[in-house]
Image 1 (cartoon, helix red, strand yellow):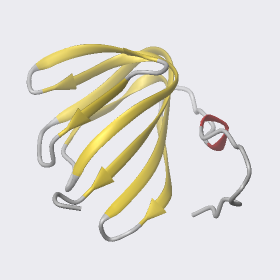
Image 2 (cartoon, rainbow, N blue to C red; image 1 turned 135 degrees about the vertical axis):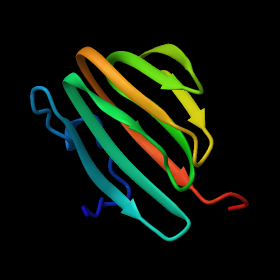
Image 3 (cartoon, rainbow, N blue to C red; image 1 turned 90 degrees about the horizontal axis):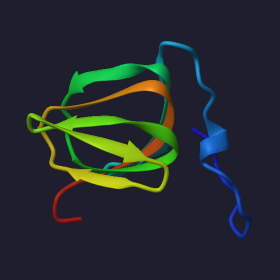
Length: 108
C-alpha cells in the first residue's frame, strides 16, 4: 500500500498500470470501515462479484460497461456509479478503462 504525501497534487490514474486482457487491482487505502482500490482493465473484464461494503466507482480514464442488478450502463471518464453491498456487479471494456472504487461500511 502506497502512502501519498499531503499537500501535493497527484494522479490516481497513473498509479496503476494496465495488462492486456486482465483486470489489475491495487489497494490504496485498507481501513476497517473504508477501502480505496484502483482497477485497470485492458480489453477485458472484471467478472461478476459482490462487495462486502457499499461502493462508489469513479472512472479515471477510458470507457466500458458496468453491469448491476440485471442492467448495463455505459460508463466514461468522469462518470461515477454507486452500488450496494452484496449486490452482483461486473465491468467489461472492449478498449481500456481505469477506475477507483471507494468502499465503506454502512452508517460510516
